[in-house]
Length: 448
Image (cartoon, rainbow, N blue to C red; front, side, top):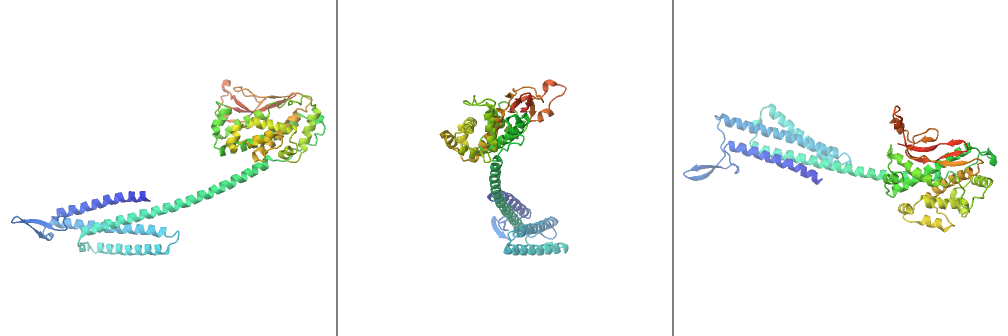
């Protein structure tokens, strides 16, 4: 508000100074000194005081000057009245909300009074009675002061309006922040429900080991990938809450990659998670080398029939192979620095290291659900009577529809069909591909 007042005072001072200059100029032309209408004359070497000289009727120049001063004073009163009405109308509008009866009444009286004055000025102009003005210089000054005072009031009212609007916007921002916090809380709750998607029911046509087919593997792979993407979203959300630089993190995972869209950097994090979760996927763990296909199929059947969440299974069987799988993958996937920056401590890692307990957090719950689906898929893979292998595509390889599925179709829009050397190239593999006997399940790649 102070800044508005300062900006309003500066032109006021300059205009008042201009008005004073006009008045003094008029007085000097008429032979009037600035000293309150006192004229100095010489008589026998002495100075005496005399009244202001009134132009004689026969002096045409003095008459013209007098008429000019009267017209100037009339116009000044006219514009001063208009400025007063304008400021009063602004006050009237401002007093409407919040309702101020005293302010409305005062502004209304001012408007009526000034309209009456303007009406009287109009009548004087029509009747050509402007010569009734006895002191046009004084009227000019008073009108200028009135006009500048009205402008100042208008600026003050405008400032109050802006302050009121600012307070309203601040309250709206606070309300929207609260709504956003509620929406984030609700989204996290929904995320937990989506991640804990319940049991993996085994299809009716898988009753025996010999019933397993590559199509079953592909169906369970899609389920596992949905769980992986849910966990990746949660991980990115936690990293954002911890003020991570996601662009720098994505560049550290896949250096030198330019993403087509800003939200495509999630594919770098998905690639990171898949790389660790599917590492050693088609090989038995240490101590499982002698385990037969039938035993892997038995484990697969047990996990698909389990109706509870993965965390419940871990609590019941903390020494199981699945529990061991979760500990190993978590320790490799979630770096200690990441865990400490997100949660402020290493409690989850320490609890997993104890060997008997598991964290009861939403983050670990989402991780264990993802691990459960990857584990079930792995048990299915090791149950097949045909060779199963995992493959990835090297960076810079040419795209092949036989072995690859693109996650960035934008690359094809900028490719040149007449120049095969400019065909889209693989920037990195997001999800590995699988071979089940002679059947190829495409890997998912990001193209540049």
